Image 1 (cartoon, rainbow, N blue to C red):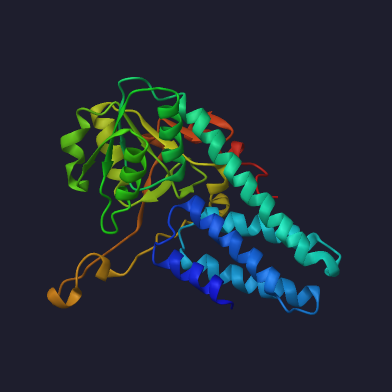
Image 2: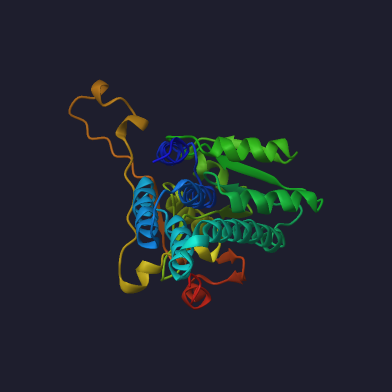
Length: 301
């Protein structure tokens, strides 16, 4: 494995690359680099080399269907290419095509989602989402005046990434601790979060802490919006497979040596059932959670 690929994989594991869109982009970039530097003498060896890399990438973050779908998209097309002499160039083109489609998808989601943001809104968001950030930045460019409340998102504080990006764009931002969501919810007009996975029943997997925000939002009568492309659809859940929830190193929470006899749990994600979600914002438009399976049909072929 070349050093550049090893570094990308390590950065994904260490959350230096985070957010499903960024992780998918990094994964496809690894395939592109591996193909470029491959010394395989046959198509079979070339495909085998890339498939092993796909397995390694998929294990870097287990709760990332967007990454799995990206790798699937690329590999299906590479396998169908018959001319081994041009397979490296073809792989390069496939990877670049996917990355372009992904960038375009984020732009479309931003355009659609910004239509839901109104003057005077107070919007609560959690963690860091490329799609959510794009929606809010697009809304700002349209001249809309609104305020965003961002949770810190422990234990890795990804909310700070969101807060910095929005504040830099001139958006009024308030940062709060995760446990303050009940305190701030009474002034919130909308909740807008991203997602790492969209399941077959319309529920979503997102950063731990999303579900309690959704519960509180419903109790306060605040609409709960989710932004995410259909490339995040967890296709395996159609067959009854449960999307795995990643459990990260307890040391991210506290030093186990300072708490002898105490079990420290650190789940990275939770599931928010469809009943708590008002709408999903995708590149295909605004939709109800229960329609997501039909919307995603045939997406990854």
